[in-house]
Length: 319
Image (cartoon, rainbow, N blue to C red; front, side):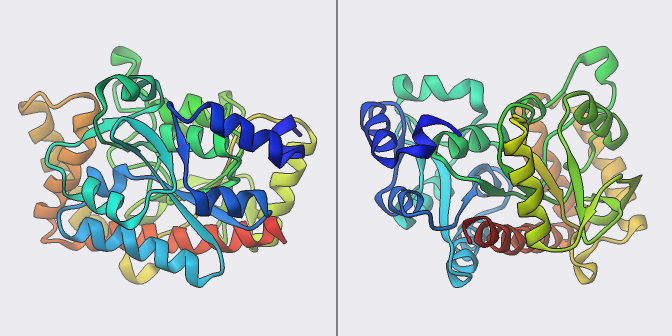
């Protein structure tokens, strides 16, 4: 337990001193100080991952789901250059509708104070900021991971290294489509990041319920997740606890549809020399077109399902 965990007043002093560099909204800071459940949400899912105006609708729906469960949502993003934990509705609206908005990983956060621009935060940046504020649970759609061909390109998401040193519960539906699931799981094992299937023995395949990879550990209740998280903290383990939650069966994308769309997207990415942070939004849009919108609805369904599970886990941890 850190000094800031033991002493809310000290945390308030730290937040005050850090005000020029990062900000925690009043409602979120009060919830944390009171020991109430809070769930962090990333912003890149609606700044880069979903089309306008659906992106704003989904961002606000995620917050509504969390509040309906008796939990405080904390949408994280960079607002006018300052990393903010607990964006309000007007700020979310501004980020959602800004054309060409930046995408910020954790390494990019210090530059925010200099350029004063808005940015959507990735899993890595959101996890870092959520932990900095004292939030224990974070919901997202899919994680970054190891790209195919990484043995030559070394293309690996910063999400993995950040999750290896950021102790919070992260609920997702596996890694994003087109990533090397086997290599990503191997990398997470090397980094000592535990993964548990939530009601499943299989690692989810994002748009599919099963990636074809088995998991060693399974949990079936929020209480079980909370017990594991508390055991990690008691053992002074520094990594996140990854909760792998399947897409609802009714919303999964059929393999034949998905495989064809992914193959076409891979070819387009190679032909157009799409690299780095531009790959994911390009892929999502290409899949949306290639599946006649089916992948978009699946993406939204799995994300909101993860939000629901995260809210239950947060309540259990605060209980």
